[in-house]
Length: 159
Image (cartoon, rainbow, N blue to C red; front, side):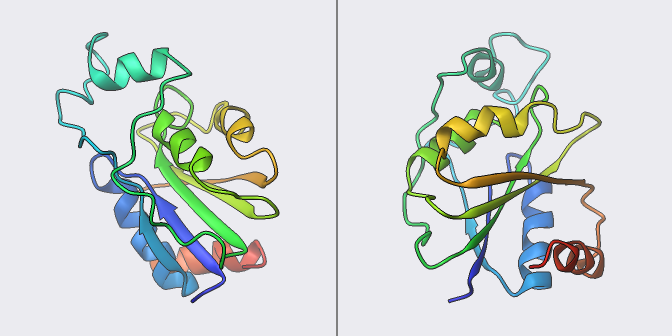
């Protein structure tokens, strides 16, 4: 088992593509955070205020259920945690994931994909869900990022 884990949530496949490249670049284990009920394109329509994603993001206490809780957290020191940016923060399923495990003493480095917005308040919104972990803002990536670029980024972080 690698001491590094890449855990990610990907609603449309973009974050998943980056996560797989990052795992390859770092020799990390890979874990997909999956919702119990998969998001449809209608669920992800941010122009519809009653779409599932809009409703979840308006309610910061929303915790979408996970499909499983089988991530091997205990054997990893560093967790790269990836997600798409929704409304300038992480989707609330990331909070669900963090609250499902004990991240005490772990270093969590965020990475994200976005159509244009930055990390916003993502770190601030996730810290209460893993209070005994070090959560660090990482970097936003496009799906076209190369394995070599990701390797250089991770090495620059000491991973």
